[in-house]
Length: 276
Image 1: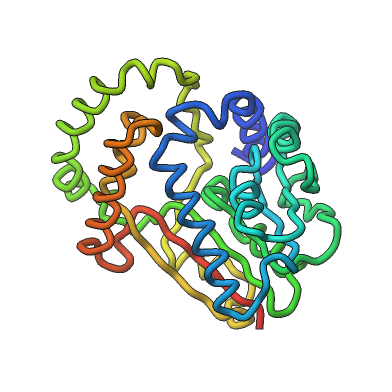
Image 2: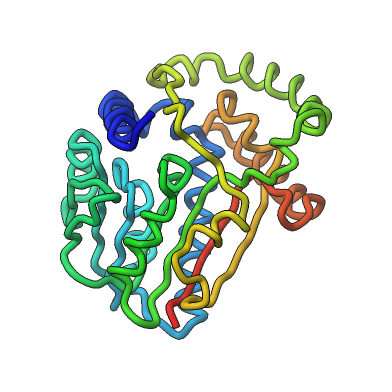
């Protein structure tokens, strides 16, 4: 697919998902809600540890969707909030959920106007959608103020969960749990929106090393990388966010994953950089 065809397909899928993006088991299941919350906690903790005051900062979420990350940052006292997305439907949903934020409709490759410099740039599950991941980092280079931070949440192509053979061996123990949870939660899950599993064929997952290589000048940033997760993501279609038992179970699995999954082997990567 050529570049414009990739963008057009992304826009088509985003427009289809927009009305129910927050209420289906594919794009916003409980494990993904939890991942976004923990990512937002990490973003704010990193800013505070760096001596910054979140309330004084302007944050831009690239590929903002319906503003899930921005809403989490708002709830953690980050100051001015802005979002960029290529889908008018997603922007409309974002404005509905977070009317106080600024939103910009545009394509990352075209380096759109985002209202001036920012001190924080976030991107959650965005980079693997880009045919040219470098375009995200070019945007970061252009809009991020000196001393500012960017934060990326995405999948890790080097994860054990993506290695042929090893993946099946490691995830096999979750099959009975998934079946039992689906049976237990069938009533709650039936109330959620159903959306087709559509994936642009141009999607490409990156390792942490490839993420670094996509940056025009990695030496311009102080970089930090965390990978984690393995089993929890496989339960995404079976967890009931309203179930106390399910929330406790996912918490226990997350703690176990952090104990036993080695660095670089995790399902998710958190990739961050402070502009020097």
